[in-house]
Amino acid sequence: MFIYWGKRISRRKKGYVADYCSVCRSPQAMHATELREVSHVYWIQVSSGKSVAFESKCLLCKSIFVRSPHSYTHFIKEPNLEKAYQSHTTPGLGEYVEERMELEERLHAGAAGYSDRMALIYEIIHDLEYLAEKKASSGWSDRFSMALVILFLTGLVGSALCGSGHMNCPYTYGWYLATAILMVVVFYRVAILPKRLRSRGVMSLLARGLVPIDPSSEELESVIGQARESKLAKAIRVDELIRQIEFEVDRVDEHSATHSS
Image (cartoon, rainbow, N blue to C red):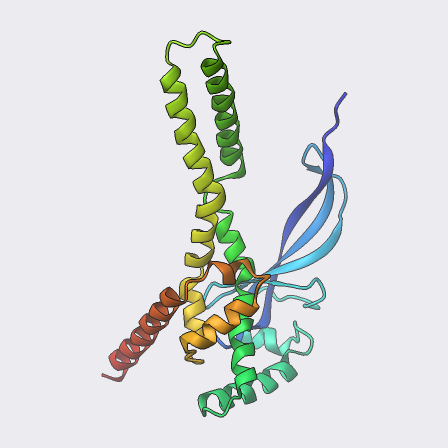
């Protein structure tokens, strides 16, 4: 008898916390979901498991970040930044925000050094990596992708049998055509679609967070070239990102002009 068992990730909504958002570039209220690695038998959970991370969603910009399992000490029930901040949901947040605001002031004054600017650009790419991977895996379901692969392999075997004469196939060229189409679809799903979803899914958020830095194309290329382990960095096209940053700047200027009038 075959018994299907193993480990899987269980998700538990915990509540609201205060945390720093690198897209908004300020502390924000976030909704925290605990990710736990649990044992299962036929997908039925059989243990409480252990906490492996928190998934934190900014309530303002909707960015999703991954945090360590020790990032938060407790949670509140209301989506209120001030209450979460006063409740000290995130140890060390106050000290971090003070240091970060000093850095932001130097950035706005044009006094931030080259290394600081490079670190700030890398930070937002790194922080959005988790969301980009979620976007990349959301194109088609795993079951649909597996079905495509199975159909492609079936078509490949059928085409081989038809071509070798081991099977009488009245529609041999139909087998070839169907297999070729499936090969293109599978290649698109595996090699192209994830890269497109990875970059385009977070492009607006990435540009919004980079607007205050106003990076040059040379700075972006330098950071992307050094972030070799980042799938998001590899998927970014600098020219597209520059255009998106310019769009975000125009949008902010238009919004400010509307409010001032």
